[in-house]
Amino acid sequence: MREKENKDKAGVLFMQNKKAAIAVVGAGSWGTALAIVLADNAHEVRLWSHKEDQVKEINGFHTNKKYLPEIALPELIVAYASLSDALAGVDTVILAVPTKAIREVLGKIRAVQADSITIAHVSKGIEPDTLLRITEMIKEEMPKELLKDIVVLSGPSHAEEVSLRHPTTVTVASENMEAAEKIQDLFINHNFRVYTNSDVIGVEIGGALKNIIALAAGITDGLGYGDNAKAALMTRGLAEIARLGTKMGANPLTFSGLTGIGDLIVTCTSVHSRNWRAGNLLGKGQTLDEVLDNMGMVVEGVRTTKAAYQLAKKYDVNMPITTVLYNVLFNGKNAKDAVDVLMARGKTHEMEDLVNVLDEKYTEG
Ligand SMILES: NC(=O)C1=CN([C@@H]2O[C@H](COP(=O)(O)OP(=O)(O)OC[C@H]3O[C@@H](n4cnc5c(N)ncnc54)[C@H](OP(=O)(O)O)[C@@H]3O)[C@@H](O)[C@H]2O)C=CC1
Ligand SMILES: O=C(CO)COP(=O)(O)O
Image (cartoon, rainbow, N blue to C red; front, side, top):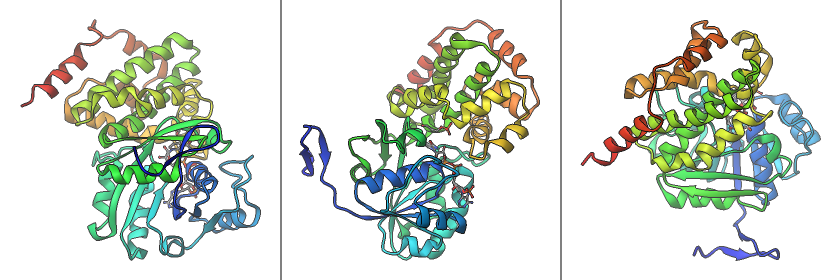
């Protein structure tokens, strides 16, 4: 039993955390919602934004209207326009920008950072072409002497609900369990329950690839196909995520956890999901450019579909949903025809492909 655990009045276990200064880099929906959790835990939260107007709004009015319109931000959140000021003396950085911006932002951190830091990233994507997970991108971009540990925080957690303090559960994973526990301690509270896991690959793959399935679920909803189709997509989607993830080295059990099925459920069924909403508009007939132009927030699943399509080829894994979605997004395939393609595939056994992947994994020496 870890020493810091204590029982509060309600008898719920929670952590008597040491209060810390923490930099949250990226002031979109997720960075801001996580800043609220940290401020609720009485940490000093420095929220960095690359937009001066947003910094003025957060510090002057304690709002971030573009991303969390209805929310009053705690005064413990202070916004910074200067990254070096935000990072001065901090030990932990929460990296909360879209996958596409990770390398650029890490370059900026590298340029001003003097001491070694733990980076906890909260993004859900895979880099197309390099096919790297975010942890791997961080390792490439940050010199060893500036990096203590890398942690990933993931799970079923829409910013809109976290910022309202609705009950939410997430998982933190790291190659170093002490680092994962450190991040668990910073975030955990009565509204935000944090689990640990050592399977970084499984957590990152589940979090990234569920966005592909959410886009597809949005499309079938947009086409008016209803619940049977969505349940099929979620179940068979998880099967293809687990096949690929296991081949990449993940623990297959991770896909039955919060960062696998948990996040798949929330993203495929919630009106808050940008990926589901984007798919829904595609299903209703908008073009990808129209959808992305109107969204105003990142839709990670689009780039991740490209990356997963490439990964499926690299690892020789059958990923039919990813493949038809790739053809809809990037090859102009009609969404309804894409569903027909999925339904008209040759007959298969439900579990055989995954069983074969597991056999391969566990008989490998
Ligand atoms: N929203 C959610 O509920 C959740 C999101 N996530 C993940 O978190 C990550 C971030 O998503 P989220 O916060 O929702 O995205 P948003 O689109 O809401 O916000 C992205 C933020 O990053 C900023 N940004 C974009 N590019 C750069 C750049 N090059 N340099 C500096 N800042 C930049 C944006 O600035 P600007 O305003 O100028 O565009 C904005 O503040 C994604 O990977 C997402 O999948 C994970 C769990 C939940
Ligand atoms: O990852 C998320 C919820 O867990 C957010 O999903 P969207 O990016 O689709 O909104």
